[in-house]
Amino acid sequence: MNRSKFSSTLVTAAIGIAMLAAPTLASAQTILKPADTEKLLPPRVFYRGQSASTQLRNSTGVKFDDGFYVLASLVDTSGYSTSVAAKYQAYFIAEVPIAIGGQKLPAGVYGIGFIAGNQFAVTDIGAHDVLTVTSTTDNDIKRPMPLQILPDAANGFRLYAGRQYVVFQR
Image (cartoon, rainbow, N blue to C red; front, side):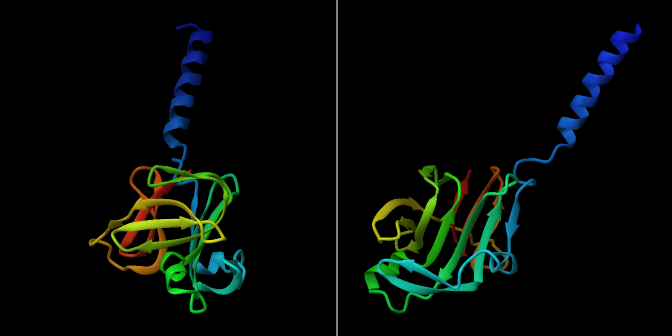
């Protein structure tokens, strides 16, 4: 084998090995715990004409490899009407467009909630419906938390409230 053909073969092999060793999309992203999100989320948020306290101990998020975030925190909805509180359980910030349950959601600030009938609702900060998707129950989850994000096998993430979840991805 001549020197240039050997070099070419070596470069091709090195590229192949580098591609196999490269991190997957999900592994290059970081799932955030409450201690991480406490530095990012405010203690109070505005939604539907009122200010509500965030429950930073019940917060989560994802930091993407390019530095953008998706963040969520449960909120104290005691001052809201029953109809608003039913859909507004958490404050949700998406710095980039994402898809939730296959539906596109533009970057923005939203209220979210897992509602009756295995539904997940996203509302804007004026409490207007943005989208609703079907949620799934995970009876196999070992330690359900009030709010958490876990990886999904399809290179996305699962946003959980207890055992209920929806899948989202960038």
